[in-house]
Image 1 (cartoon, rainbow, N blue to C red):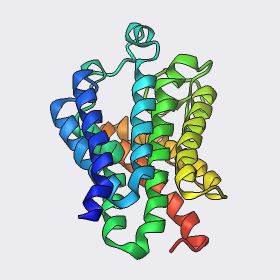
Image 2: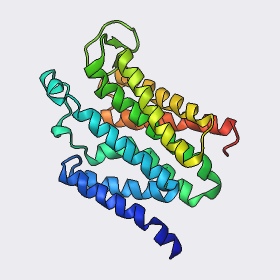
Image 3: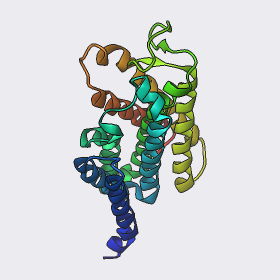
Length: 242
C-alpha cells in the first residue's frame, strides 16, 4: 500500500499528460494509451527521474516539430498527420526505455545499469529529433553522412553541422535530467556521447537501409534508442554499474 501511495502523484501527472496530449492532438488515441503504458513502466523502474526524462523528450520533440512549421510545410519537411505521434512512433522512441524500466523494477541488481541505459535511450531519441527537426531549419549545408557530399535537405541520412550540434545539446539536457536525480559525475558525458552515437547510427541506417526501403522510420528510430542504451551500458559496465 505504501508503494502505491508513492506512485500516485506520478500516475496523476501521467494522466494529466495523456489528457493534454489528446486535447492538443499531439498523440493519436492509440498513441495516448501506449504513451501512458510506457510512462507507467518507466515510473516503476526509474521513478520520477525517469518520468522527467520522458516528459522532457516529449516536450522538446513537440516543440522542435512545431518550430517554424510553416517553413517546413512549404519545403515539404513537416511531419505527416499534422505532427500527431502514433502508437508505433511512441514505441519506436520509448519502447526501449519501457523495457528497461520494467527490468529495473523487477531486477534490483540491474536497476543502476538499467536506469543509466534508459537515460541513454532517451538521450539518443532527443538527439535524433532535435537534429532532424531543427537541423532542417538552421542547417547551412546538408551532406550525406556516408560520403559527406551535398545532398537533399530532409532526406534520410542527410546531416548538417548545426543539426548535429543541436542534437548534442539535446543529449546534454537529458543527461542533466538524469544527473539531477542520480547525482552529478562522469556519467553526464557518457550520456551525451550515448545520445550522439545513437543519432549517428540513425543517420547511417537512414542513408542505407531506410533509403532502400529495407527498414521503416520507426524501426530506425527504435535502433537509434537501442544504440544509445547499449553505449551507456558499455560505459556503465566498464565503471562498475553492474
